[in-house]
Image 1 (cartoon, rainbow, N blue to C red):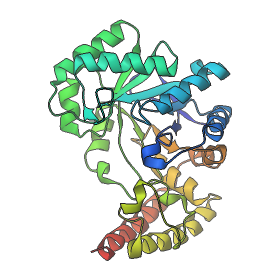
Image 2: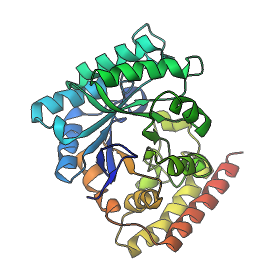
Image 3: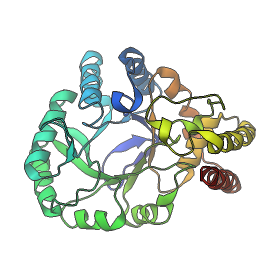
Image 4: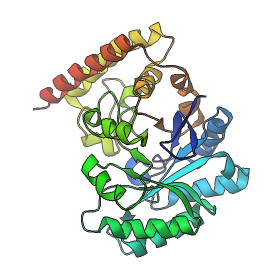
Length: 320
């Protein structure tokens, strides 16, 4: 496993990051915890030392299960642990964004309890809150760092202007954005910004919610949040499947599977520090680690990018 320094922090993280979003029943349905826990242990055996979760994943479920595993296996100190806050789900049935100072302090305490740890390595704002002043966020972060409860701070799903507003009040060490062969908007502004300011990038949805994994067929029907998502049904879905068939041949030329090719494509971008991979069972992590062994040649990177850009354009047009 290769490792990189996360921005200007002292955190050395694996090129693959174990993602815990899958322990979020509202999005993915019920996921058996046993195989998931085995996958965490398998990841550690393979050299994956970076794990990302959020308090909102299952309204605390993912953090709680991770904390249980840390205690059971005694492996907390072997991981760089990243978690996120933003959604206040403790004040009633309806979630709402909350990055006020008081809420951040309460949310952090709750995450520490669930994770059964005394500190969080990377604490991230899950999204942009338009009605809380950045200096109030900075005040909360300063207190958490002073108390030793958080080591470094990051943001997720923010644009450069929003990051600038936060960076005026606290050190932003990383960005967590979506990035894949089918989601490349951040190449224009966010990734150049991160390179310019030496921010780490841990991208999510490297396989575009599983679509780039290459295991679906024209008969696949989705019964989770993907059922109504673009590219996951109808004529557009079939166009993406055809592109995947072509890409498998490219992958085979490098001794890779389709998901390994998709993740290696992401990791070839010099701005990406670590690619988050969503995992439900051990084979999801054991089957992807080869992606992190090398970079794609420049011509191959552009060939694959063009293949999926054209397929995505055609697929979206087919939905109209």
